[in-house]
Image 1 (cartoon, rainbow, N blue to C red):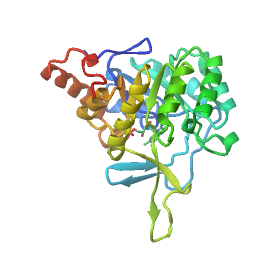
Image 2: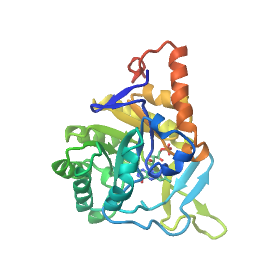
Image 3: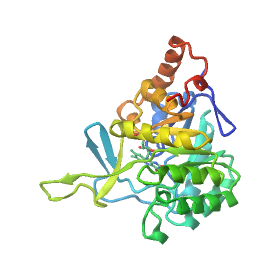
Image 4: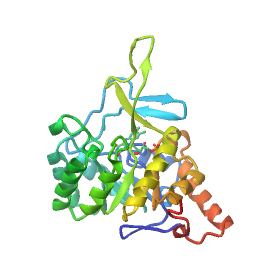
Length: 298
Ligand SMILES: Cc1cc2nc3c(=O)[nH]c(=O)nc-3n(C[C@H](O)[C@H](O)[C@H](O)COP(=O)(O)O)c2cc1C
């Protein structure tokens, strides 16, 4: 009933764990049967190992979570050596979330992934572009297209481009990625946000700003998914604050083909299973035989 085809790949259902909130799956295997998930997006990996940011890394807000992890990860090569086989053996689709701060980071990372059995790269273009003054690659069409083109030159994997909601050109960036051959769009990453410790008279985070996720962003993410869905013909994996099956169905109605669940996994380790079961129940009750019937109806 929930089977979903994304860019020619058959997912058993459209519910995928969002990058950075699920590690490489191991921690969650104690709580849920990972083979029941539609897929898992790996923690973002980069060409070189990253120790992550210093200071406070996560901060709760009303209905949301701010984070400044700094892409802590063991490097693409170490991930491939130690974790990829584990993930590929879980009986669920694997998206390798690839980040970078230079074009070369992305290209060399993609080359390493090319020699593996992984099928999908989720290309995180929300990272700061060091060569262009630290502005995220996904902010403007040119930078987004440059990264995607360079990665596609060295990769035969399906490329799902993960967009930042912080770009004023979000729809244009999505359209440009579609034109450049993106297989799907994942959206959205976290919203740039600020928290201040009034007693220390300082920002909570050493980097001053941090990324906001969770239910607080859901209505905005949903609106953005609809905007992009009206403009592109490739599948969209929608995310941002999804907590239950109703949220997931909203994203499908806004035009998403599948969804990712991130922050809410920290609140309820069983959330994704509940969402899958809830969607099935909803479809039975509403006499919906396929998600196609309700996809993008808004
Ligand atoms: C702690 C944390 C770490 C994250 N790390 C990554 C990452 O490595 N790569 C990435 O593309 N997105 C990362 N994200 C963004 C999520 O994948 C997701 O796009 C965002 O949190 C919105 O979904 P949510 O509201 O369901 O969490 C991270 C989010 C959180 C909360």
